[in-house]
Image 1: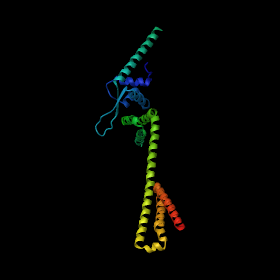
Image 2: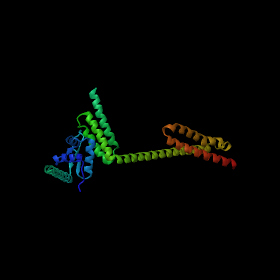
Image 3: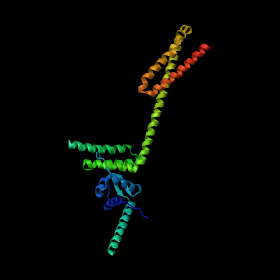
Image 4: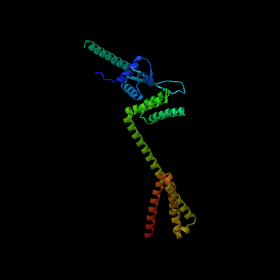
Length: 101
Length: 177
């Protein structure tokens, strides 16, 4: 059985699915999803703990502080896609039900 | 004025996250550091402050239990280190006092070697050299060190008490005999 995800987690997963191969900054994800740091980072931490998210420090030239980067792992990508598919199927079923009703 | 206030807000945000980074348990350090780095890229000082507050909340929520445990562990470790240091200072005080007594004894034997009649006829020079002078030095040392390095002062005082007891027992047994 799939774990129920919060709408905020689904937003974060969707943000990653928009550019699955790209490494993302925390602040950029926050802006894209509209989530505050207090909501976003616990989600990122949980995803990373479950092996669904890769984290890395940016390599930059001297004098500029590095930033933390995030990218979904292959497992994370699969997980996010499955959730997106099942959500879409759920929405279709709801729409069909409403149309019949 | 306003610019200065705005920068103060950003400074507060940076300090807040910096403080959390310092106290954070190891597995949360990376995350706290990541949130701190993002601060530089947030437009608006108040937004940066709210980012910092949210980040602190996130760290406490995720790492709070571990943070408390690690905090206590660090305190315990600091306490143990402090106890170890104190014991070392007490030990040093005792060793210094013992060295002083040994020096006094050496002085006494040297004086007895050069002028034996004085020590054979009257016992008080012995008492002065071997007991009184070291005891005075112990008391002076204890008083001077009491505020600056109390454990060492305690060590000297301990040695002084032991030495005085030993001396009194020696005198009593001498007069009885």
